[in-house]
Length: 107
Image (cartoon, rainbow, N blue to C red; front, side, top):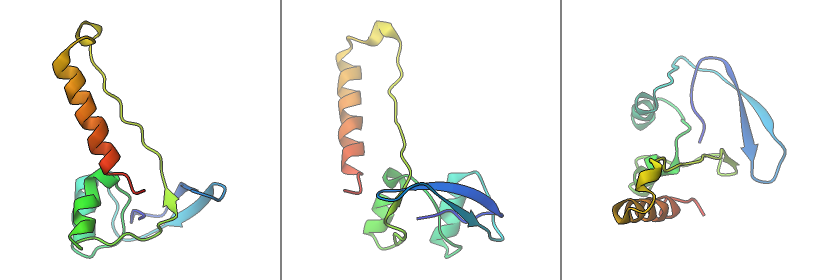
């Protein structure tokens, strides 16, 4: 997937290849992922979104994945105060999120 936008330079990391620069242009541009998602759902172009955001829509056929070989890495962090480090509720929450994001993997 790739995001439609005003003429801009994007670097994408191919799984096997070296880093490439791709110039993307189009009549629409936004830094709001929800708006870009709505544009793509209504046929307005392609977008770059996290798999956890779009995997259900891919499964329903509402979106189609293109450029399978291109990915961007994303880190997700659980940030919490030190005083909660022994919290059972926090541990369960973090474990749930780890499993959720693992299930959203494209592998």
